[in-house]
Length: 262
Image (cartoon, rainbow, N blue to C red):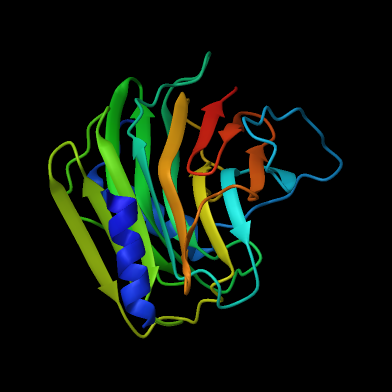
């Protein structure tokens, strides 16, 4: 239903201890202050990726992104949306202390790295204590929280970004399990290229890559990228796998599944 609603919008638009919330916010700002969330290709590596469909054009190893990225000419993708069930983050086998990961949907950030419009959640576990944070960002501006957005394990979350122009757009999160919806309108931002749409589980950087949480399996469903002529699914996307512990295990015309493999 939401994917259909998004398509209608698109067509209309084109006629350590547990950190405090303030500390977690500062961490998210710091992790992007040094540079955008971009892939770090691992040279000379290879691995078997188990694809549910044969419609994958490329498979790239990274140190920090696992998911699917659509790549096209500039001024192609004006929206991206997907839903997922919030996982319970766990410390990996033998690991203790702070571990985290981000789950997000975005426009640009791969072949276009000058700006990124994205929204999603952070999942964190620290000595068994679990926390979640919702955020949006138009890089290179810092990340901002969606304050008061409640997230629990098992919730069904929809994440959507829409570029109304190269320099303005919206970021929206909907928690279908609680009925809560938050939207941020962004204007006068650095120009997007509109050449990437992505659905990503990320081991983000904070000085270096943070200890990566065991996120189990995340499946993005109702996956759509919006163009001036309608919506397209992830079939044919470039697949990004994290070389050590994050792998895309399924991709179809409307979903992307990422599993922790550490």
